[in-house]
Figure: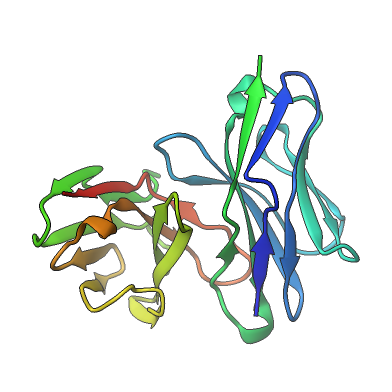
Length: 115
Length: 114
């Protein structure tokens, strides 16, 4: 079985400050992890993914995420937030143990960047 | 590439009417997913097709919902009869289905059943 948790419904940060959006996961085998962003009235857009290798993954728009196996976490980070980063962020996990191609999505975290 | 195309973008209908949502996946993608998004339940997977065959429809709420994929470039999600609790944004997504690949989402159809 696979599951993902985003413990914060909303994250508030001032423009220019670093941001972190948290994600923890549970899988039986090896985790494949994804972050997506959803802007208002739009579909989800892929930001980055972790498969294997370097625990720090870099993605679109200056975002990065750190895979931590011992803490089963995959937190999304950005060194300096922009007002335009305000959106809904989804973490997703996929466990290939059973050969499934279906990811499980978290409930999403609303990021609000204040000017 | 035009991306995943969904139509209509907005649909307002009365309870009891039939609703058909349409999706054209990205050319070359062989997996297609239908999701429903609401404030209460977040993003829910309804059904997953691979090579036009339904693989997992365990998320389909009830018999009022049906989905088809007659060919690699077209899929429909039908609700008959519709109910107010079906009001949501419905997303279609596609990917290659092999390996660790991300999904590409369409813009969604906002359905309102009155």
